Length: 544
Image 1 (tube, rainbow, N blue to C red):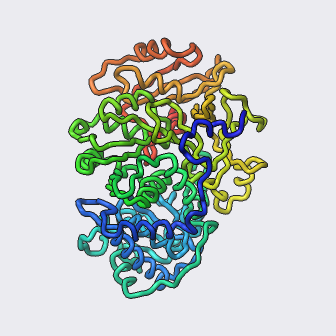
Image 2 (image 1 turned 120 degrees about the vertical axis):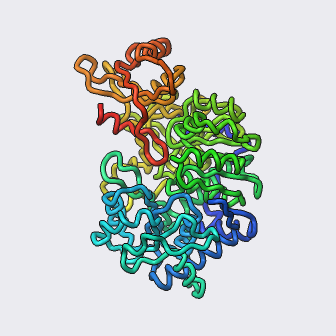
Image 3 (image 1 turned 90 degrees about the vertical axis):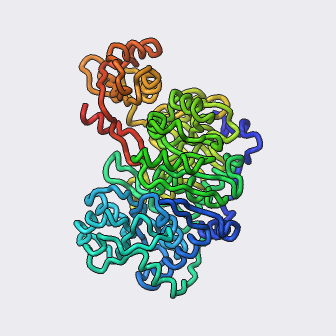
């Protein structure tokens, strides 16, 4: 295949970005603070805080971490917070002193929390107070010696007493108290450059215990510059309003919603719990965002919410979908309701995360995840590590300044994760078209082999979800004596729909080859999902 054939479709987009534009991420954030100072940076719980507020509070917390908690450059600090202002405050404090932030899902069980703390070697944790009882169960098995408990409304200017649950752990300190103590202290300058590690972003652990993708300052700076190059028209300095529904402990929202849009002075409306659709809709009504990011399941759920029709979408200029495949049926419905189709992108925790995305200039939904971003090389490899021909499916392998250094302290896994010439193996199967647009056909491990034919569940789901009466669906392979594997489709029906298995199978038969038609259909109330809204096929396979 011709190398970087997508460059001919770039138009005004630069082929390369300057990943050394900033020495480190704090330099990028400081520039935004200096430029947008008193403008609103974040909205949360009916309160707003400015860029100067975030800078001041994070400076005080950084001083506390450095002088009282004795956090040094390279130390790992776990952050277990939802989308609240304390998250960007903690992030800026930690990176300012050269420490490494370990993002932890606030919904993790004590077992999952213990694994991530011990694997990362974190000895300080900034934790939402509702999760402190889970930490208390395992803290004796970890090296944690400093616990900062956080209230939901910390850093909003609302005066609060220390978190209720801080008292469960002897020596735990409320974040507000730590910031107060740090206000009287100074910060010793810490030299930083792009090669210093900044984040341990843990993967979902679908093939065993979760691993920490070690991301450097350079990785994130590069991906911010790559995203800004593609989305130039949707990143107007000081004019954008972003609704952050997906969690910032996830790399997509961290890089796009927080860092990229903070760098251009955007107002950021934080939604603490994406599962609370009433709250999401209320926030969208008030925010009237110009930019919204999410996953396919979020957009589907929003459109099925009774309050969705009351949202004023006249300001919306860009909707971005990632994390899982965006279905054409979802994008078509979204455009009919908002006037804005869904721009799909693709990436992973290991790539900071964006690998490909449709540029802002794209005029319609294509079903492709877009083109590789600047300074990025992508090749598709077969099972023998040979590059496939144009139009054929192969494993997506990527090289670029946004690709992680490797998994944290996992030399064996790193040897398997990269090709001999340094390309990261994503585990996703993709196809390039003649314009250089990449379509992800599925996860390598989710492919189903029916009578010797490769079947990609994404294709089946796209067809089935367009059937009237289907809210969402998921397809998995199950053992079959005759065909080796067969397709089982799990589907959620719309309320009061009388859709039958026969109806749904007949719909699929009209658009799919016989071997791609689901052999079984199971109607369920809900599909299992991750905290960012990805449908968990592995759980469906287990139940099947």
